[in-house]
Length: 83
Image (cartoon, rainbow, N blue to C red; front, side, top):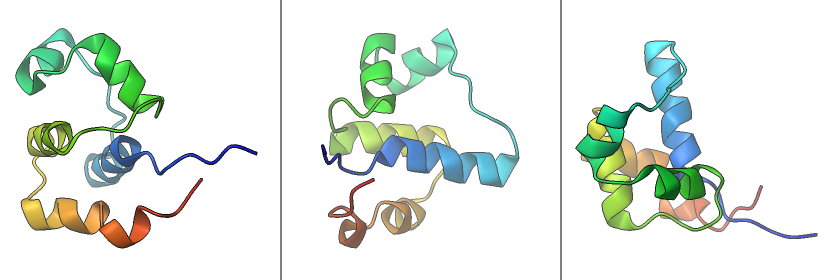
């Protein structure tokens, strides 16, 4: 059985869905604003590679998360858990 680290991007999107009640559908404008290409976004969403801290910060700021909210959602204590 393979073990995968938590998908932090999906966690941020889930929190955003709970806050706004809408499912996120990325647009071309989204990719331009965060500076992550569509192919890289797909890799991150599928959890094929871990997101860098910079990418996480860009995504979190796009969705309007404050730094402390993001730290709670992505706490290092949970990084050792597997799904």
